[in-house]
Every structure is written in structure tokens, then in C-alpha cells.
Image (tube, rainbow, N blue to C red; front, side, top):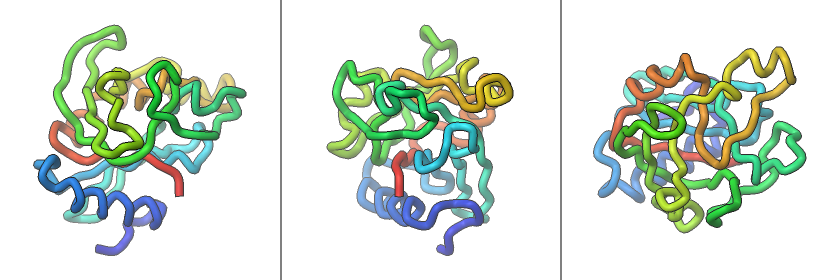
Length: 174
């Protein structure tokens, strides 16, 4: 498959390799998500990719405060350590929905040694006020999560509808 427009080739190829490597854990292979943490937080870097038609929907996504301690807007490093408040990298499989302290949320399970503590760390997909586009107007960048994939509140339903359970989410930098 050719790399869809706007998707970083290195991350796309790593995501496809992860899709194959973890095929026993990933039930649905039609749509994947890539969190491209090369880019500044004010850029839409959460990509929902339809592997059947090559279409891409890009959204804003926050990264963890532990990955960007000086609040530069860029991921400086990843961590899988509990209590780090950092974003972790690698392949995840989307899991069940629940309602928690961030409202409607979705669990993700890390499939690699770089993110296998995701469930214990409560790394999830959720909506957040600090991931809304108006944060860019006010502060020039998004706020930071505690390591979760936080998207703008008005986009959360769209993410859940497109991604659903049993699909690949790949996070990283090229």
C-alpha cells in the first residue's frame, strides 16, 4: 500500500509492520490511528487512516507533561514508567469504553516493551479542554496530558466512531 497523503512514511511503515507483528491481538485491520509526535502540538498529528481507501482524518492530540517538561509543545522523550506522566511509544490495541474522571474514555493496551505498562498507567483516549483548538489561539499550543491521548472534546465521538475497539493505534516519532 502506498503512503497516504500527509502521513509520515517512516511512521506509516512502522505502523503497518506492527499491524502484522501483532495480528493476533488486532481484530480489525481496516482503519488505524497514528499519533505522529514529530510535530508541534498545534499541528493536527492524530491521524485516522482508512487502509481500504487511503483517506486520512487529522486531529489535534495532546502529549504527556513528562514528555515535554519545559512545555515547548514538542515531545522530548517517551517513557513507559509509572508516575512519569509521559507519553509512551509503540503499538497499542484499542479496547473498551468507560466513563471516568475525564468523562467518556477508551482504554488502550500497549503491545510493545515501550508501552506495556499503558493499562496499569491508565493511558487512555479521552477528550480534554486543553486539547481544543482554542488553546492554540490563546497559548500557541495545546496543553499537556498525564500521558494520555487527549483529543478535543468535540472530536471525541468521531475518534470513537472511526477507531472503535480492536484496532491499532501507533504512537512515535520518525
